[in-house]
Length: 163
Image 1 (cartoon, helix red, strand yellow):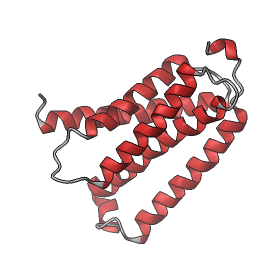
Image 2 (cartoon, rainbow, N blue to C red):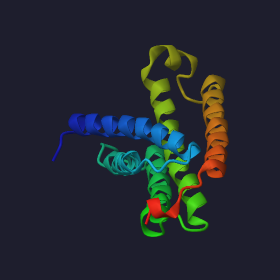
Image 3 (cartoon, rainbow, N blue to C red):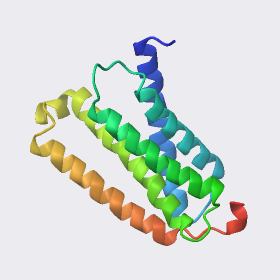
Image 4 (cartoon, rainbow, N blue to C red):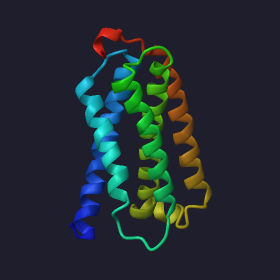
């Protein structure tokens, strides 16, 4: 088994790859492009990010465990919509909303980590209950909602690309 430091490094890299590929997938959704390889990379690394998070040392359930569970639930919806139901009917918007919810949750955790690890941000919100932290998270949520709505309205793929 991996030692905790190695697992944390793998978890962090998976998260960063999931974030980057998720933004590429978002652009593809807005442009109504399938981006099949990017989508597979995004979904796989984001699932693995959540799964590896459970292997990190903890003596009780943490908020990150709950976010990981939520992420796995929405990722299951995205994977079913994309690979089982091939985006037919309502599965198109279910896919978009689920995939973008997973991207948002990954970004949410990234903001938490930035406030914990970047000294300049940590000074502004050392307990993550101060206004700068709340403002950052509310802005992230607002942007995520707006981009998800845009993507859901714009994404009109040909079903042949997903069968």
